[in-house]
Length: 445
View 1 (cartoon, one colour):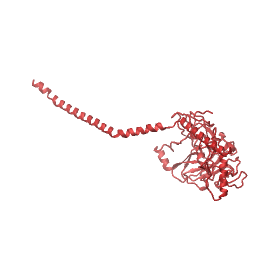
View 2: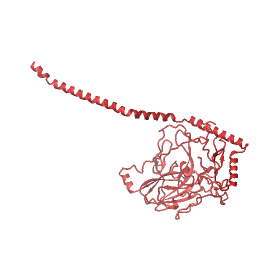
View 3: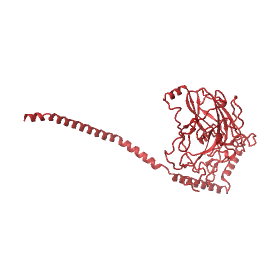
């Protein structure tokens, strides 16, 4: 009996310890539950309010159908106003009649500078709403008020196309993505101008797919040509390309304190084919009429109804954004050129100047000199033409420019940096059909 008691005496402290642990764990579990309840009480109201706002915002999203209905309603209202005004003026164009009355008032009172009024609405234009898409050209202004101007990008799948990577001549530009695209690194000519890297860059126009779910998109961009390529070569002659053409390319890689020289040739289409293929607001200074007539004689483009010639829309230059550059090579808004075959009283900007110690490139061409007296950095070169800079860049006239130095190369050698870097360009783009439809949501006539 003593042996049995002795044998089980160790159970009592073990059971006691177990009960104590259960009590402690139970207390901890209860405290955790209580804390969760208190936390839930503290944030529930805030969470519910956030959820309510998100749900409200989702319900307020406007569908394409609703947008089209709003545009149609606005067109109907404009039509009613136009019809009423036409009836008031006995069938005469209400705009002409309103401006005529305004002119008569100014004759009686020459000092009057008030805007003309039509039906009590100051400066209101009673233009009949278009029955279809407006034709954009040198003498038209986009219809901002009645036409649905938002873009209807077709449905495209996400994450199906790999990003284009850098590609170099040493591997035959083989680093292509599934769209057969890569960002080529330009090949420097180090012999034509000793002590400098020399490139011949042409501006051309071509079609390029932006996504595997869409047809090719019209773009304008820079293409490196073989040194010495005759400028009379037909535009888009890929046989003379020194590197594959690609949107936002070629990438120029320069060394600190080693100059880069560029011969830039504008090989865009001429005439009407040279007009931009996106709408141009010609009320913007430099995008519409210039100070000359078609025959080159002076013209006052500030007068209403003038006959001044329009600036061509195939003007272009090159500006190294962020570069320490001599002014003659800065690519300022007035250092643009047109293609050599363009017929215009404005063949080049008033500030065009070539590099003095480089060969004269001739009409439709310019030379540039970049000192590269800067530390390692990423920059980009892009168009800077007066009045249409934003449009030219939008259609593709931009590319990367990298300066490297011994400090960066040391980091690359020690594998701290991944070579010159990974190209990543983020753009907000929308796409429309090249032939717009009156009902763009359904692409029907």
